[in-house]
Length: 235
Image 1 (cartoon, rainbow, N blue to C red):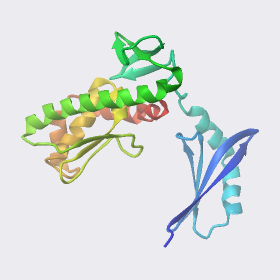
Image 2: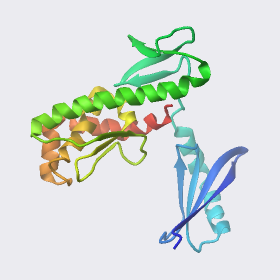
Image 3: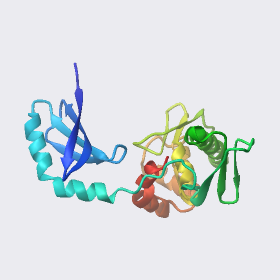
C-alpha cells in the first residue's frame, strides 16, 4: 500500500519563487507547513484525502510566518575559495591553489586545495569526511577504553535527523558535520553514542554515563540546540 506521495510545485511568496514539496501521508491528521532548510523551500504535508486547494489555502494564510522563517535561515556557505568553514569550531579559510601538487592540506587556519576549481567542492567534501572519520575513530577509542567496551564498525554519513547513532551490534554511525562543531560539542556527541554501547536506552544510567564521558554535556546540548542547524547550511 502506498503510504506517501510527493509532488513538487512552486509557491509565489510576494514575487519570490519558493520550492514547494507537497507530501500526502496516510495517517496524517492535519495540514502541516514547515520550512525546509535543505531546499530553502516549504514542505506541505496533507492528510491523504485532503484536497490540494485546501492545503494551498492554509499555506496562503501562513505567508508572514513562512517569510519570517525563511529570512531567519543562516546563509549558505559553499565549499569555494575564500569561504570560511569551521573545523572543530575554529574558522578556516578555503584557499584554491591550482598550481600545487599536494592535494589538500591545512596551514594554521587555512585549508589549501590544489587542482582544478570545478573539482574543489567535491574534493574538499571528501577530505573533510576522511578527516572526520579519523578524528571520530580516535575519540571513540579513547572513550570505549574508559568503559571497557568495544565499538563495531564506524560509518560516516550526512544524516539530517541525528548527529550519530549506535546499533545493537555496536556499529556506530556519525554525521561528518560533527567535525565542524567546537571540540567540546564534538566530544559530547561521540560520548553520547559510546555510552549507548553500555546502555541501549536514554534512562538515568545512560545519562549518568554520558556525564562521565562528556566534560560539558549541558553546555554541549545548549550549543546544539542554538547552532546545530547552521551546520547543514555549509557545503
